[in-house]
Image 1 (cartoon, rainbow, N blue to C red):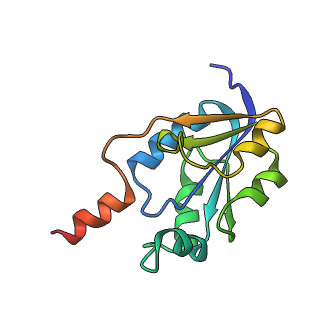
Image 2 (spheres, rainbow, N blue to C red):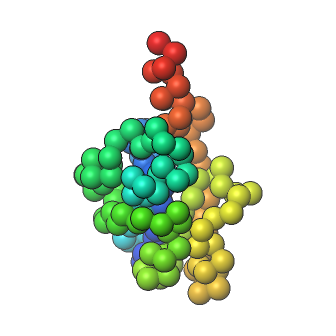
Image 3 (cartoon, one colour):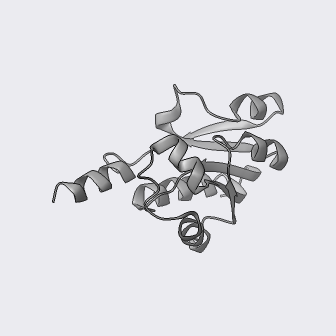
Length: 139
């Protein structure tokens, strides 16, 4: 299958990298030649998820992601959203999980105005870092 886009970007915390993350990364890579993951820094994760997150620090999360065969590059961002990095990179496509379809997606308006595309990826059901953390707490 020929890839449609030159550069694709996705973003997130990727705390406790799990099979749901891998499933999404594989889908994203199938659409683009190069896939860059914009990774929330530890301070950015705390802003979004609270003081007890992330579970793994940004260096561990980055190393795990860059070892993944679907990921070409990982860039850590320190702001609440990756908009500055998205504007700098100018990707052709922005990937988010389907759970973001009716939510605000950072960079969506910028990508659309610049002729790019937003692709919502299928999520694996009942798989999330929060569920993993909660299941460990309940044991």
